[in-house]
Image (cartoon, rainbow, N blue to C red; front, side):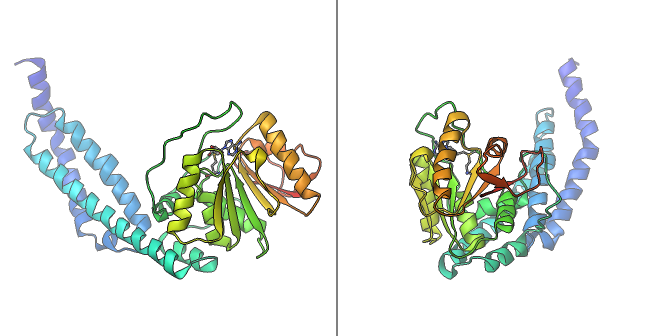
Length: 316
Ligand SMILES: C[S@@+](CC[C@H](N)C(=O)[O-])C[C@H]1O[C@@H](n2cnc3c(N)ncnc32)[C@H](O)[C@@H]1O
């Protein structure tokens, strides 16, 4: 017997307990009606993750080592079937919620209540993370987006411009809690990427929200999302943040969209605006330290070295 043959036979024997354990997992999931109830989004996310990364991945690993694949192939088919049934529940859920937002105009409390129905989300001002991290709230908010494929970037960024990365949804919730928006406020996201921050701020606070984005395909994507959800008070402008018109803005958000000279130029533009009316600047990420050096701004949030804690600045 060659070494490879003996490995296969050993594997078929030693795999038995693992196969048995996976079979019982699959059976338990199939029988648990709670996973199939639409409202149990959180539970479903965890179980889809378990099926994908603990069951299917393990089956594939064992399949690579066996010459008797029948039992494992059948098990894999069962696991994939449950996974796609559970995913189908979420697809239908999100289609229904998108239609609700579009036709019934959920903003403010109504939108927060809608989220609370599905995601166990408690914003705790003392519970900060030391890094950018995404959670079930992000998966839920992503699901509400009418488009799921990220567009290709068409323009090269200048060295001081920062590539697209999404602000975690819980940070946008926190921003809305901290800003205490009034109806008159106009929110700007500088470097708005795919538009999620401006859209969420509009849905959570009901205020007019605008995004400024350098990359035209991102800007088109964000415009299409807002139009698809029927959000008439959300708009996106494809322009370099140094050249944008901020004359209506009262609250400006930056998830470090640029650094160095570009950041200084944009801050100089915002300083001019602050001479005409009081403004707030909210920062996230490394740009907070630079914004904190501006003598025309008051740092309202407690000083902290954690760059992934929102910076809240008010013009003097
Ligand atoms: C870190 S991402 C933040 C995206 C978005 N604000 C969010 O939080 O989901 C930075 C974004 O800024 C854009 N950007 C970089 N430099 C810019 C500039 N000078 N003017 C406008 N947008 C810029 C990038 O294309 C990118 O989409």
